[in-house]
Image 1 (cartoon, rainbow, N blue to C red):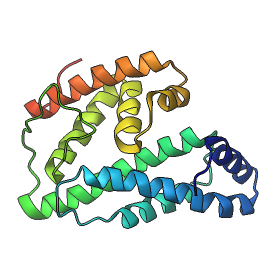
Image 2: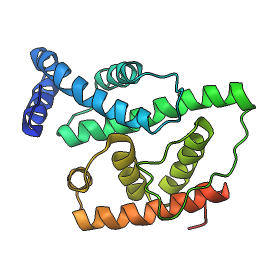
Image 3: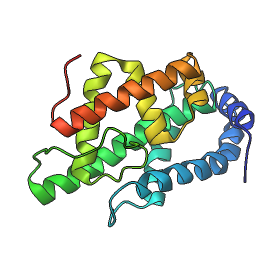
Length: 195
């Protein structure tokens, strides 16, 4: 069931306005997209990941629907929030697994500067390092952190991210390149670089 972004936006706005039937129509549409995102994210995890795409989607969807105070603006806003929640769920899962397996200490990882972060497979401890580096980047430049989150965790395009952040495609591309280089340096050293 493919649906246009405008259809999703319309359903989100109707849901915001109190139309409970809009949520019923929205659910199968966004569920399919969330499953696609979850499959894509989990393919980047190392083999043997114990969280299934279905379990990830269920957890994310329940948290999204439970957010009563959010006034969804459009499809991009919704999936940007989904990216943040997916990140949190995967990181929480990795923390549990890593603390049980290794005692919880971080290590350096080897990511080449020319490697695409969107295709690198991450083990639990590497995902935790990425999360920590992303938190540090967020304190320095929140917009760049949002760009990484939307691109990496939600698979959004530069155009979609630009729309969500109210900026240009070129700015998103620059932010992505700078954030990617910063994150690779932070992850390879085991410590986030200074501003």
